[in-house]
Length: 278
Image (tube, rainbow, N blue to C red; front, top):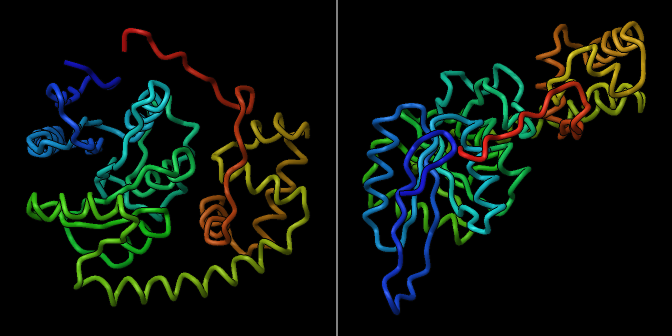
């Protein structure tokens, strides 16, 4: 039996001799172990599905990265909307570079990170309840589907195979609410883009570092500035964007399409070498 880097079993079905079934590789990401393992077992019973499970966002990112390096890239991620117990939208998305961190990555932030790191992987969000706002956030982050956790296995398989054909799947009852949320978000994005455009090039650099989750000291080291100068730039950014906190500035930046600064090994964080036995 193969093992994911977070210790969860990889439930893999090998082809029999002469078999020619096209395999679909699925990664279930849920911090409720019983649910994740039950769903993985049900999916593994399908003749064309290989499935593994990860119990957190960072574990999922490591699993994705390792699979890609070994030439067995995943096709679909099934992500718990409530992963980590945080409500998406209340804090900035965790950048994909934090795959080695021990902290939490919420479900929609994970969707955004996967879209950046491995755009060929389709993501489907599993939710305990219908929520048009969060479903719209998931689609904006790059999700291809939003389905109820208690949906039938046949329905889930239909969604999995559908997103691989570039289809988008939403419960019919959510469509009107999601379209309303997306329309409102587009209006907010236009205003956010106008505000970001008022920043100087240096202030935009600082903002991208803020989106990447860097603190003042790390930004100073990255941009070869003094912490005092960085503080001044950050204050100017908040003032021009009309917000009062870093979290609000990051949320506005993301609405405007501002991505995180690319983080190298020396950009204010420590790279952790993964154990070869993991």
